[in-house]
Image: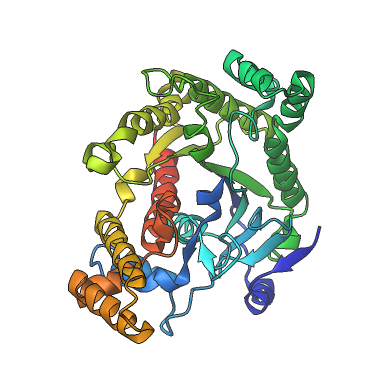
Length: 402
């Protein structure tokens, strides 16, 4: 596996930063699919400062020169950022989100910033996140056994003339693959922490201090796996698997009370505020969110598992402005069909239409989006709030009576 370090200069400085001789190094594990990867480009940072409520976040995320902060006392090792299988590690800064066009962040950036502030000591983040992965198959916990195709899936395969035995074997092979990859990477980092965090003192050791799970999309849309998803209890299987996942992670990491955060899917915001165009999804979305959060209510997890409703960090204003973009697209298509316009005239007409549709302030707000709605609009403002929310929840659990 090829290994890359993002902040080479900052990483070298880590050798001069001593870790407290009093406390073990706190280690936090972040796991999930594409929203844990993170698709918020740093080009959207300015939008954070436009809101007085979130402006203080931006001050924590950037330097006086308006460049992404490099965290002196937070280290990270991350895999799954792209399809290469590469590991990215070093001191925490922007760039540990999904790879591709633009430098991106996920929840890890502000999670690390605020978790370190809460603890006032160095921390290490181990992040494993892959886009398009399910809990029912890809992250399936070991004690749940391999995924078994249900009657509806078997019937569908028969109609397609597929080899049923091969389909069963393929699903069994895929079951838990990313659970195992997650554990492999966590154990790899823990076996040689000094490789990632040069100031680590092995005589003092480390402590697993928290686990954050932020996943859900592929299960929510899996109608073949959850055929009754529009009914009460239609996603009960997810709740069962999530609870088993928590138990298995704690067992396999020998951390029976490891604080665990479930980041509940919330793209689109609170279901109660869905507009007419989204009402057809409201029941399914709410059912799934309830199923995600359900394990936190189990008596065995009281005080050490909590659900964070990421819908509470949704930016409704940004979403509404993006929705208006449909009118711009429609107008552009109209102009392209009008052969009486020259190319320059079409561009001028479309520019005038945009100016009438958006105020100058709204045009600036729109720069706060860099991706699709299911990726929380690629908004650094939303991702920053989510990351901080995860850190605050772990801190709250650590303060609750044991």
